[in-house]
Amino acid sequence: MKYDNLQGKHIVLGVTGGIAAYKSAVLVRLLVKSGAEVQVIMTPNACEFITPLTLSTLSGKPVITEFFNHRTGEWHSHVDLGVWADAMIVAPATASTIAKMATGVADNMLVTSYLSSRAPVFVAPAMDYDMMRHPSTLNNLSLLASRGNIIIEPAVGELASHLVGKGRMEEPENIVAHVDAFFATRGDLKGRRVLITAGPTVERIDPVRYISNFSSGKMGFALAAECASRGARVTLVTGPVTLATPQAVDRVDVLTALEMHDAVMSRCAGSDIIILCAAVADYRAASTSKTKIKRQDETITLQLVANPDIAGHVGQEKHEGQLLVGFALETDNEMENALAKMKRKNLDVIVLNSLRNPDAGFQKDTNVVSIIDSDGTTHNHDTMTKREVAAVIVNHLVNRYLQ
Ligand code: C5P
Image (cartoon, rainbow, N blue to C red; front, side, top):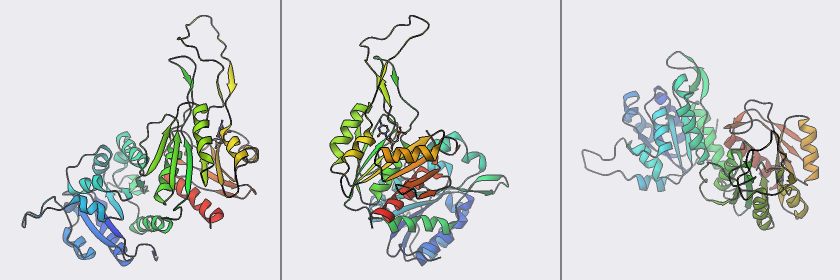
């Protein structure tokens, strides 16, 4: 396979101490063969699995393993490396290094360089079955993904322990393909202004209670990270979520549907692409009690009034050249409802995700989507991480509408 987009690219390859480190030699070779300049950084434990000599010979550069060169006293500058890098790949990424990256521990040259780098970071986990599915590891990966790092999911297969399951580092060819695809699309949204909504809205009932939904905001944040990394100027209007703002994204925090409506309507005219991913509450309390509502009778009636349909309003005001993308999460008659929604709201594209699929939906890091154009053309996709889904959606918009 030929990778066309790596010529002259500066890649920092971080190798950590897992048995999959033996595959790093192939990874370095493929990157170098594709024209990339590779600077390898190894953690002390990685050196137990594969020698720095192997990787420095293949990369044509001395491998960095420590903060200092003990022989010469020379200091390796993690800051310079961070500036030099066009991309950083951590492969294999052990549970320990992933945890350090997630929490900001900087006790070796690799994780210190990670903290100093502004370049996009690809993480290819490799570890044993039980470590891979441990809640700590899953949480740390989820956190890294939410900050815009690109997780290259490990494959399922036989592991070094002879257990069979998820945890095998993705093959070097596929890791290089990910990075190559990333550079292929870099800059294809340059100069475009993108407005994205994400997360739930919160509708107050009284000073302590509210109506909301289970939206985590992960899909919208992944879209924001993807668009920003492709050169767009991104504004992300988000309801309350616990996610970090992706790099180079302008974030506007709102609470209620009315606030989200105002934030979107005042910005939509100046946007080229509008992606409405938020799970907006359809109704809010007709009136908000100033004091906490006391427990009284066995039943209580709460009167609700409809919130504005933000997508519908943007659809009405949409002008020539603007692209409007909505999402639909349906529990029944999925396709029919999604198509009706697209028409009613004057959307150009609707992304359908079904709650019926266990890999899709609220709080998850993965999603299963169908992308539907207004002429009914439908592209069904398999389970992917939300960041991968974001890339697929943006690829579709670029290829079909922005060429
Ligand atoms: O909630 P519903 O399934 O109708 O959402 C479909 C699309 O409309 C989504 O893109 C959602 O973000 C958007 N929407 C909105 N304002 C609402 C309700 C939904 O922008 N009040």
